[in-house]
Length: 322
Image (cartoon, rainbow, N blue to C red; front, side, top):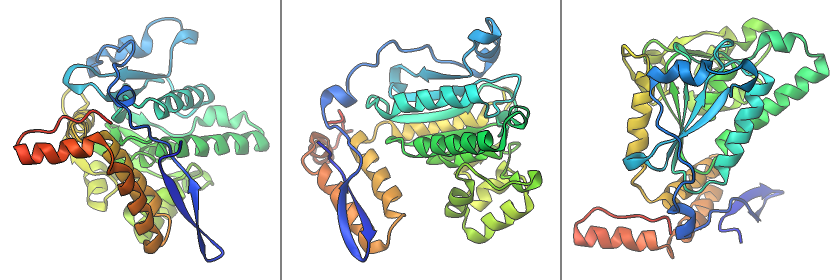
């Protein structure tokens, strides 16, 4: 049964429609994660991205953290020779992983990161795109736009760790995430106008909503690239940090942020994301109605009771996602 409803405006009337289902059961949020993968450090880049025959290498992988980080999942991008450019195989594998995460209620935070030094995602695979007919290219970009929407629609918080270049579709991928961290040395830009195009995977819509219309128009019209520090000043990323010797400073910052989110009540975090995302799409009165419905879903949860009890007893809460 749907536990959330969405307010939409149509012909001056507010209609209530089913939207996102979030199950509130111990088995959903607190069940053990099956077949956990070992934690991957930046120094393992070569073994993840280079071992084995080319045809057998996964270009996108999942890494489920364990121990105190249980509940954090990393999406590892490792299309080494093409700098994580958005080719057919890469996009197809990313779509499958995102779909699996959407239904995995044991996941509380998702971090998108690259295992290729100096690169987050270089954007479109122009060599592959050049071989497409006009209808094929249009269909592929439609699928790419759909993928970014799927990432944005993940029910749990998502963080993009930008330790290198995030250009064109690479920045659009980062913009589809809720939060972004970047190294000072990272370069970001929607550079499509320098190639005779416009951002076609959500960038023309998400960038203005992130940095404001005037700044977004300036960046898109000029195709300008900005570094991490400037991106933080513009509000394009949440945090920018000096790059370290291992080249993974943004990833470490993203993990630090994920660890702040991890102990919070998971259903409440998911409902807060829905309230903000859906509320931003409508007028404030409708947004208030959305907030009210999200809040109402939390009242009967055991996590709310635990939060109140922990406050009264002056102890840390122990949320179980129920």
